[in-house]
Image (cartoon, rainbow over all chains, first blue to last red; front, side, top):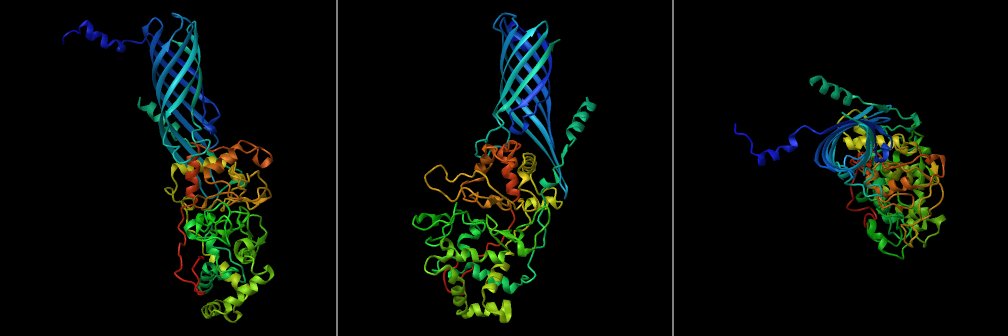
Length: 176
Length: 361
């Protein structure tokens, strides 16, 4: 196999090992009216330096939400750009996009029968986050804005026609 | 890796079941319609009642029938915020175009499923005691018959005094040979009387029960009858507290409450009395019976959901935030549709014994 020229090699830069790997634990707070209860969240973020003040990041996360009679498990794959106002400074801000999928189980015990249903769905989101990283630890908060909602919100036309505008997230991460 | 996927599937497979308070549960409709001991339903009474229901001869000026405001094209309502009886023409919202016609103070409730009025989680009340009208001012379908007939705005008009209208109508009916035959077939020698008039119409109204809805079929064991969205809507409906009042087989506790229902759409027209105690509306056939509220102020179910979302918390009844449930309002609407998709009698007779136009001009 012929060796890649320098020009061809640059196309594969993104495939190199990440410069940073951060794992985090936190909470998801969906702005889904009924889900005003936070749920646990875990995520991992890979970063590749592309500039002294910027990284390309890819992330994956998963979480669960629970209320009486309903559980939702959600997962996210995302990508974006993280910027640092100061070179290697502690502060950072991030913009990106994500694909959020979920599976939800609903159950009710009524005198006549047990009611249950399973629902699957996915949403496309734009996300923004800010954080502080010190000594290998980071604290961050963010919000995933729903760009393309799942298949609901087609009939109802009231004030709350898009109550699920997104999901707030907060986490504490450790850089590996 | 395989075990990891298996773990995910097992975790996702867990269902957390909500067990509502026994007072907040829902149930399917029973198959047997409550009937008064002195008015068992017979085909002859139903045939007579159907003719009377559609015949404008029951109104003072022979221009309004029961079916005028309870028409099958509008799920036995009229599609109006508040009804237009005397002075109106046509069926449904077109009747509101005559601005000089008097408005009744309240929205015409559907006649569908009224045979089960009073049925709650505590069981059925005797048919003789079934609550009628928005404020439960009379009991039984038989007694309900005389309310619209005596009302000047609904059917009587102003040409005949209230205390005379029933006798006038009985005399009219007795003078029509075809009705004499129908009454004799239904009631024998009892003939045409106010009582047999009311019993015949009530007998017909007891047949206006839709076939099982998706909700009923699901509750009776058909796992495929309700969509996932409708089940999520039902969960949210109960979780958010709607079932505190809208419970049982009729999704009504048949109690009277005073809620801050607005009197207008925001414009100058006052739709009807805005205050007072009114019954918890049954949600049976709810998707087919817009507009909503005792004065019809809510044009669609989205507006109703928003009303409860934004309502000031003034009574313990409404403590807690009532909001459109899981997935926003669409799931709630899907649940309402599952309460409303039963088939019902849409027969419109070609003629009535009086020779007048069925349902009125």
